[in-house]
Image (cartoon, rainbow, N blue to C red; front, side):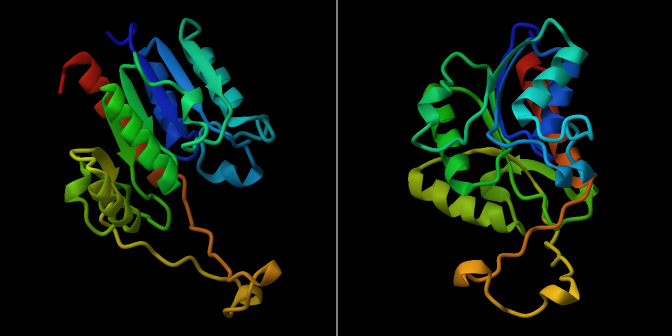
Length: 227
């Protein structure tokens, strides 16, 4: 069943890279990898595809090469694009066995979920893992039962407005921490161009990866009927 399965994975960052890794090692036969980003030096602290030798590469290429090094028989399709309602037609979901949402923009997450449900394909979504330090608090649930996650709160509201229900998710109820601001950056001063400063979420090596492994475990159990 796994060898015949096709999984479409959106997002190859701290969460999605571990999903790809686990699915490849579990023997999933076909993976479509969707991401528009390139590996950056700042990714080295948490992303399994981020190595000093892959910095600068498209994440789809780095992930595909890693998957094929694990399982050369895996059929990998690279889709280097930023997923939006306008580009969604470039990634058809019909015929897939599972869809995994590991992206971090609400617009893309909503589009992925809506299109997967319209295509009749099971979908699972990851909520926020930034600014958190406790992987043991991660939970596998449905979106309607989440708590304590700011991203999940927004997704609950938006999915309810669109009639999207019973969406499996991985989330953490851990209260997000506020990253420390270096002294030179303290104060509410505007960014370049007068826009307010937007604080970058802090992230560590063990929370996003743990979330990715939980997502992959759910996918494998469902495909094989072990759930």
